[in-house]
Length: 465
Image 1: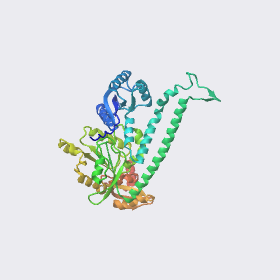
Image 2: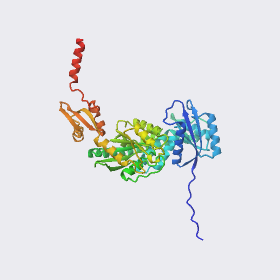
Image 3: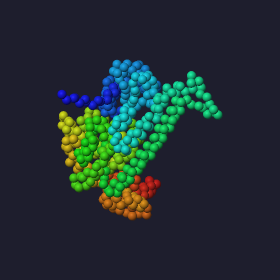
Image 4: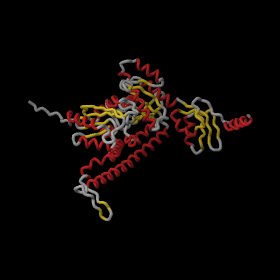
């Protein structure tokens, strides 16, 4: 009888208890129950096994432990009964709160918050050098103010027997714990500085690449949306990009750009970007600036919404809020409702179309509605012209030349300091011309060219009256 080949050993999943805290007066796009459900998905993506949940409503966080002492004891007992390894808070914990909670739970369990969990997921899913550097920077910036707890046992030994540290020549001698803490802080600050330099090089390279794309006049489209809305699946459907897809939060992290041919023969570049999520850690927004600039520099945004998700509207609002924070809310947006193949009630599509008449409903997985979406993209990029009236200084010859190449000129006047143009431009160029608006004329009305004469005439009439 042949020997049986043993199955590969699998590392045991850490057992986690999730804690959701609702603070009265704090705005959220989701209820506390919905948020803890999402935290459970994040925990699963990070490789944790959720064995328990608990929640509490507070008027304000406890100054020491974030939650009350009674809740701390309740969670400690739950962790002991469930044999938990880690406690995950849905809220972001301050360094002090985290330190105090770890002190209460002793060595039984680790305490992390939502931010640390997301950082861990990003670390697992970063594959390119850019992604790895950005995650590493976010992790170091998160850890720096939390270093104290790692050396409290050494700090207590400093000075020996509770005695006061001596001094030589007026310079205080620090104990070994404090010295090591300062060394660690200095080392992390140095790493942060070096990482920022490396990421800035990547950012500069991206800027040069984007400038080259602008000169080629190939418009760019950025896919944005809540994590797991189907952006990567859509990019694969549009371009055969072969981007990794999984039914997980943050399944893909590193941006992918592909060239796509549109129905009337035009081309565009479509970029898949990192998925958004409510309570997106500020460290990630800062670290991923180079990547997020792909959004702010795009000519068009496709906002992908999971129509089958029970909280699709809350997710839609959360993404819009993040786009506003990124100052990307002046870029044209096409809303795309994905996963219509999962709907059990087809009337939902009609209701969505009535509420969002300019939206597209698709199934990226099944290829439903893709041809119509491509037509919408082409129409928005190449056939949607906005009426404008601009006064372009002569030193901005590139902007003037672009208007001649891509816009429609109705009337042009060469003046002493610049060129006044009445006409229309593709919507994707609107932000370039905003600094030169005489007045925005989306309604198609030209601003009066004799404003000054009218003003003087009105003042004379007023005086005579």
